[in-house]
Image (cartoon, rainbow, N blue to C red; front, side):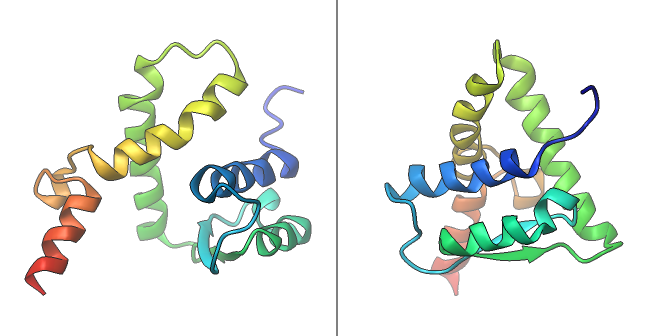
Length: 131
């Protein structure tokens, strides 16, 4: 079906693959908050139960929160511009296989103008060292 959106099953696959990739297990070693929007597949009871089974605590952006929405949209725009548009993507499994690496690069290496051209991890390291 065209423009049907992403299914709840697809939404549940993303945190599962993330937990498996990051921790090498089907459950996080401690509770980790996961932030999503308020879309139907994200707030579905089945998705929330599944997230808790993975050791994740579902959290949602505030409804009608322009700041949260703006941050999310800026992240998606950067991901599309700096990763998706410059990478050959023949199929969905290829995309799913690359997303984790893109996010890792975004957090560890990608310079952010709002962070004085540091990556988020570099910025946090500097803030922690000076605190």
